[in-house]
Every structure is written in structure tokens, then in C-alpha cells.
Length: 293
Image 1 (cartoon, rainbow, N blue to C red):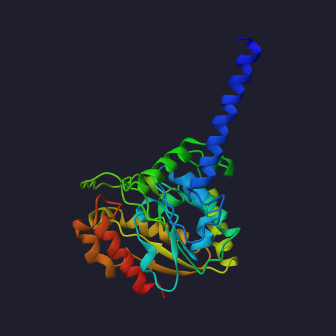
Image 2: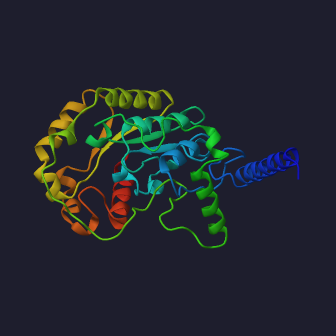
Image 3: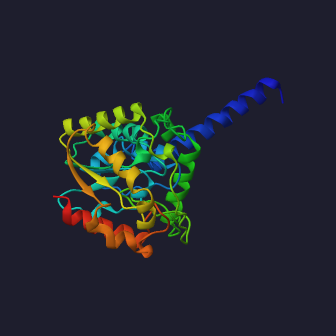
């Protein structure tokens, strides 16, 4: 075999692999990019930041008219019970508002949203770092990337009735990973309550963009496990006093108020100080559905 023949065959093999790769990406289309996403039921299995970024380009605006925006403390809240809207949960593990804004911006270019629930919590504004390559992700990754191949494999397994555990629901609500309870009740460090000016500006711009899109804003202060909250109550109160005059004015549902104390005091509702379990998430969703208006 001559070197020219060998090179030709290698190039032909590479071209074939690329064609198969692109054909599979377009046919399976786990992010709803390449064909009509209306009515589809797409899930997030891996790399949630990039997945929700890509899903928000077409899938979210085509199927949902409301958004839940927050960190991991709201990631497993099921927004399906909120009346009058079809809500997508954009929350991601460890997210700050700069990351959430980048994801939400994808949906705003095509969608029209009636309601946006925005979590108001210190970790949302501590910094403006973008993690997991969210700052550089592009639509091209829907044609070829590690997370694409994992999503494709998950889609095939689901078709074979072998779904992957901890995959999100089609509305973005994602079960917490891990099991069991662990309560590290401690006084949080001062840096936990840092307020980064870039993050605050991003929060303000995100809310203003949502309002310009037609969305009604509702801030939600999440419910920490009561012993953790009490130990840090003064710092949380100071954070809320600082933030609420800065952000655009809107209704607030305060799950740290006395009305929700019985829920917060019950350890069965939690897996740790910050995250509710499945039963706790269901109770919060029901509460929001009753009070959102």
C-alpha cells in the first residue's frame, strides 16, 4: 500500500466517522436544536450547565412560558404544579446568577415568559465565575462533544426502557444525587455572604430582561434547615436588607419566615442544611402553587 493510498483511506474513514457522528446528533437531537422541539420530552443527564444552555435555545422557549432560576437548593423543585403556566427549572448545581443569566439569555431570544421565580440567596451573588466551560459553550457542541455522546447514550437506554438514574424531568427538575442525610450545623464564614458587584449587576440585568420580555418576577428566599438558619440568622437578615433595595422591585415569598417554621424544623424534609429531599421539594412546590399569586 502506498503512502498516498493509506492517507486517502484514513481521511475517508475520518470523514465517515464524522458523517455518522453528525447524523446521530441530528437524528437523536437530545438538546432540541436541529428539529422542531415542540412537544418533545428532553432530559438532562450530564453537564447540566451546558445541557440547559443548549436546551434553552429552542426546547425551553418552544414548550414553556415560565422559568425557575436558582442554585442547587431549588434544582429538585418540581414547578409543574404552579397554576396558569408551564414552568422550566433552570436551576443548576452550585450556580451563581452570572451562570444562570447566560442560560436564561438563550431562552429570552426566542421565548415569551409570563412568570420567573428567582431564588434570592447568598451563593447566587458571591461571585461571577462560570464553571464547567459555560463561558465558552457554543451550539456546535450539539454536533460533537463528550456531554452530547452521554446524552445520546442515555436517550438510547431510555428507549430500551433502561433509564439512567438522576436524570432530570422534561421540565428541568433534577433529583438530588447521593443518598442519606448529613447536617453540618455551623456558623458560616463571612465570605459566604460576600456580595460581588458583577454578580449583582448580572442579577439586575437578568431580572430587567425578563420583565422586558413580559415576565412577572417573584423572588423566593429558600428554606434552610432551621438549626442552620438560626445559627446564621443575623447574617441572612443583613444580606436580605442589602439586596432587596438593589434589585428591581417585585413580590417576595420568604420561606425563612415564621409561617414556614414547622417545615424548616422537620429534618425529614431535608438531606442537609441547604437541600430538601423529594418530599420536602414536593411540599415547597405545593406551597408556591398556593401562594404564587
